[in-house]
Image (cartoon, one colour):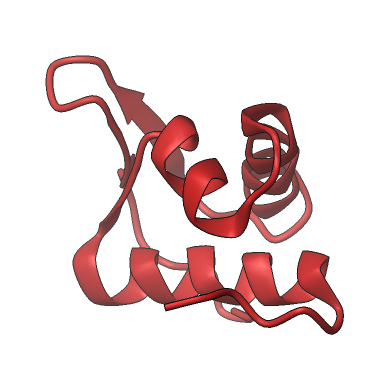
Length: 78
């Protein structure tokens, strides 16, 4: 499935937020970047935005090589 082309930054954030809500984790940034056809640093910036602006409690799990939800979801979510 190809990522939508309009407003890709917002679409990526929605994708990341949905993955976190439904699975409590997201794949590593290289896998997500490959899906969205962007650089892994772009996905890192998106995760920083979710953590720092939207207060998503995310942490990297080096054993599973993924980002995980490590607390309660914030009241206002994407």
